[in-house]
Image (cartoon, rainbow, N blue to C red; front, side, top):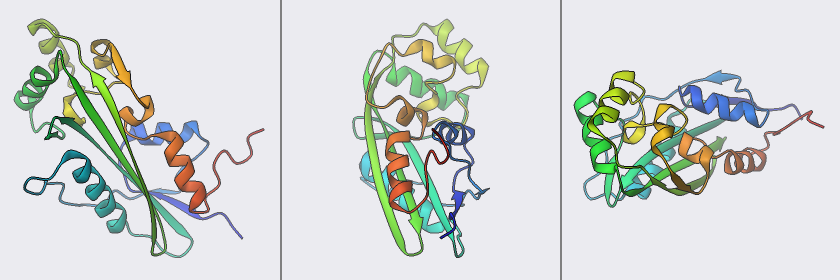
Length: 195
């Protein structure tokens, strides 16, 4: 049986880098266009799982293709903090998160035919207290754009994070251990040819 074609349903360069760590290169990238608005009273973990499932169901695949999708959500209590709309919202997110622990939830889903395999990983992260100058410099860097909660641990904001509990790669946007397990379950070889 030939190896299935892997379709990545995400435009995230970080997810491509993380897949490369486990010897996986998608055959195509097809980010689906889905409404990521939270439902009324939806809890962050439920939201993240639902959006990931909607993404994988919306990713077009043909015979011999499997789809991989993921979503990362930052949660402060019951509050869902997605990608900030603008600099002002990014500033607001950073001020809410600083000096506190929050959760970073990443859900992943793999689809082969009509079957879907799903997992989610919940991490705790602490952002240090930030000065106005640190916030302004970070916002000027524009690294907050397109990042859940307005920061990325693998970028300059890594200097603001003294502590995490959980999976570093999940905080980045794709838990490689869980992703490898789902791909293998779906019949996609991981670390093929590595000795």
